[in-house]
Length: 412
Image (tube, rainbow, N blue to C red):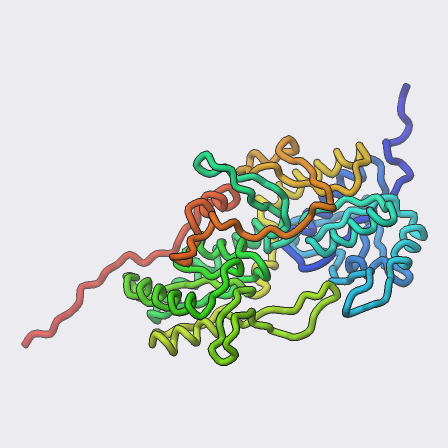
């Protein structure tokens, strides 16, 4: 018997994006929208994350509209709004969310975000039975996806989230470029990279040629700081051009002799609605200590929002469409409260739905960089991490000046 309508004709699916932006969010929105439309859904976009479901709502119709998924960031905008009561905002705004879901006749929500955004979705699913599907997003790459990486016959639990591949490639290119100015002045460049609690993104700089790295997973205590400075001096003296690039995650805990404490460096004391403060400035402190303690010129440089910005790179583009294919499977089976993930690290050509699975949103949590990916005694990423990155990024091409000029010795 001929079917007159698509399977989900008359149903509405809404997409929202929350938290920090990444280069892959628009690609995720486009891929999810296209597949939901194919199934018959009317597709809405909720602007400014969960904030777009407060008050009278802020909702757009994405059905049959052109959409540029290569353009970075999110056309739906974002916010760090938490409708549940928090220390910063004790008001319970969940009733507003529930009212607007009914007003706009939204049947399913797909939330593109990290632990915070998807945590709200999870709570709405568990407490109010709202049909939700989470979609991973973070440049920090610390959202636990249970993606397995096989290195030399050993299975390592890694993470692979949309947004990270594009951001890591940007950091790799940044580190590769900054080497020329470090060499020109025989300096040490301390390059600050985003990463509140995990050092995944920092590894992009090492893939781009940074010789040393500090990550949040291993705090720099008083004893570790002295050892680190010794290693910096040795590495600098061994370098042919007397220059180094040292990448430092913004969330590194650093020993402060004045306070006698080991802590992060805060750019601001203000916190968002999920209780997160803003970090920043660790590169300047590390560079200053290198200059003062070792007598070697050191300068601080920050990648800042560069990693978040720009176009969606090709690996991310295919990763988002692959995970969106898994969303189709979840919608067809009405298997809500799930998040699509990759089962294993894959080369670009292997990014297909059969290499995906889904995890319960109740199991979503943060996953720091595994110890096997970092050499704590040499302050650098290990071969295992470089192998992990080789699945995602092409082998970097370093700018290199190979000439070694003869020294002129004046005649007597």
